[in-house]
Each structure stands twice: as structure tokens, then as C-alpha cells.
Amino acid sequence: MTIRRISYIVKDQEPVILGSRQTIQEACKRMAERRVGAVLVTDENDRLCGIFTGRDAVRALARAKDSASTALAEVMTPDPVTIGPERTAIDALRVLSDCGFRHLPVVSGGKIVGIVSRGDFKGLELDRLGEETALWERIG
Image 1 (tube, rainbow, N blue to C red):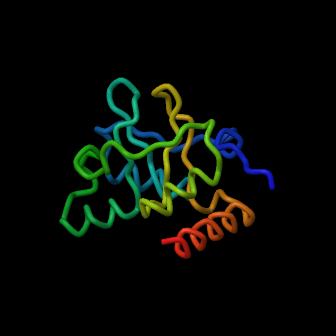
Image 2 (cartoon, rainbow, N blue to C red; image 1 turned 90 degrees about the vertical axis):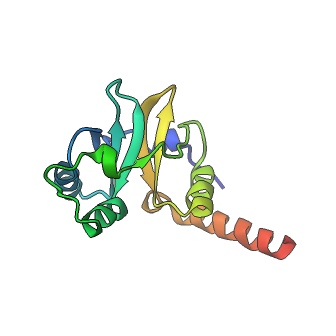
């Protein structure tokens, strides 16, 4: 079975990237336009400093944050777990599964390369994760 590298999965990707001072409203607008579930958030040096997802938007609105004036820095998930582009699809699936994430930023040498989510993976890759999980459950 061939396991794809993350670099292959994100090769033509243009992830939504916004600065930490941009607002919840801008992030949600861009997410809706691009039909994605997450925005990668950068600091003043264009380095990944957070991720803003639909879950973060719900939490912010539940706390009555004003979407037009609240900066992403106030409501994003800071310092997200990342994966390198040289890793494999199964590596990413393990992280997503083990950590309970829906989105995983792809970073190389401090530079944002893309983002993967469970929907980016094929049946064989998902099947392999299921087989590994079942094996660990039998061992444990």
C-alpha cells in the first residue's frame, strides 16, 4: 500500500491565512467564502501563532464577543500542534485522532505550507489507522 506524503496532499493548496489582529468577522467571512473550517493565524513576522476554527467561533460568540471588533489573537487556539510536509498521511491521521483535532497545520522551517483535515485522506489511509487502533486496543 502506498502512503502519501503530506507534501503531496497540500501541494496545490492555498490555505486561508490571516494576521492575529484581524477580526472574528473577517475570519468567518473568509472561511465561508473558501468553504473551509479553519484559518491559520500569523504573528507580525508571518509565523504561525494560532489556528481559528469553527469551534473557536462558537466559543467566542457564546462569550458574547463582538465579531467585528474582537481580534483573532483573543479567541484563537494558540501555538497549534503542527506536522512537517515530509511526514505521511498516516502520521497526520494519528495526530488528528490522538489529539481530537479536525485540522492540522503543515509547517516547514517555520513557514506555513498548508493545512490538512480528516477529509483530505483516502479510504486506504483511514483503513490503516483503523487497523492500527484495533491492534493497540487488543494489545492494551
